[in-house]
Length: 446
Ligand SMILES: O=c1[nH]c(=O)c2nc[nH]c2[nH]1
Image 1 (cartoon, helix red, strand yellow):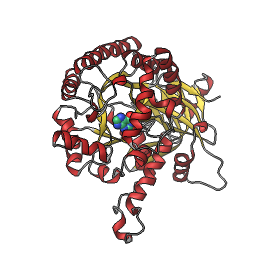
Image 2 (cartoon, rainbow, N blue to C red; image 1 turned 120 degrees about the vertical axis):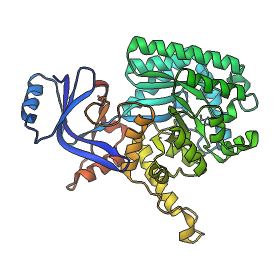
Image 3 (cartoon, protein in one colour; image 1 turned 180 degrees about the horizontal axis):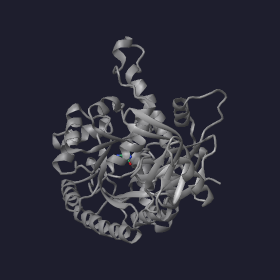
Image 4 (cartoon, rainbow, N blue to C red; image 1 turned 90 degrees about the vertical axis):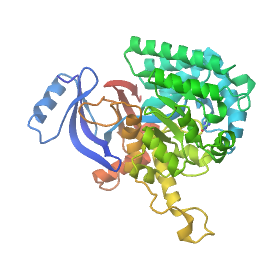
């Protein structure tokens, strides 16, 4: 017997290029929060199951203007930067980090402040339809545990990284690990504490190996983190060739590209997610493919700091693994609806180019435009695959991580394909009505 049945029309990603739309389905969720069956109108059992669910008051009936989507997976987000979302984005990356971001992150050493920030942050992710997130914390063990506990409490599938930044030449004294050894032993303590939390709660909460990025770490720290990633079989997250500056830094310090450096230290694993990658070369793409490491595309953030556009279309064609990240606060919004829109818009600009003083055929990279179906794949199925989660699609056997969204009033008849576009282009936080994780409501708009 289904614990909960949702009756309505849903959209789910079939593959990187196609979206499945199913009208008037019955999505039957079992007591473990897994989608057990999906019945379509022509199924012989449909009418009976609908009636039973209704009689037993286990039915969520979507209204005519409501639709069901998978919950989103935010593949790159900085939880401690939530208070500064939307600030200082006209600065270059290095200045933004030194003048705004590091001073803010340092304040999370205060557990009272951390509690206030993380409670609000997790709530806002859920309210924006995000049901799983790969998060950077700070260098502070206690604050990171507050983030992990808050994720569990509010029902977010949380992947939490204790940031390592021990390089005195790039990290300020007031906000850096005192030594590589101190960073590594605190990371190991964090791994055990989060694993205990996972056992006690039975929820998805995982520690993540998190060198902030190559410039902020000493060789000793990078080497030690690579070892811990393998020893504990943990996800890894970092930034990779995000900007001209970061890309150039690795070459200057190591005589190798950022990707080669990460690989050298054993940090490109099949559980690794590298953010941005706007400056990656085709050789870097190949290395990432060979290691089965994913890229978190952060299109809003890349406008400000990326010095380029990630060629998503080409990477998907090559079967590189990709997902979508909000990159709060390099990106100003936690909404993956907004990020999906920006991914499509940026890809169009990559196709056309932007310098109108050049002949049209020399301005851009032809054939780079992605569709909203591609962007939706990144925000759902792609991100879930990168984290090894059986979520991100509405399909029997997958966890019921879902969002109910309300479409803006239509003044003309719309096909289901049109409705998908309308939802992806117009949904705001206030249009997200209910969010489920594992079949349980974790957010309800009043
Ligand atoms: O967008 C970014 N946000 C950060 O916090 C950061 N740290 C290093 N590189 C970074 N890029």
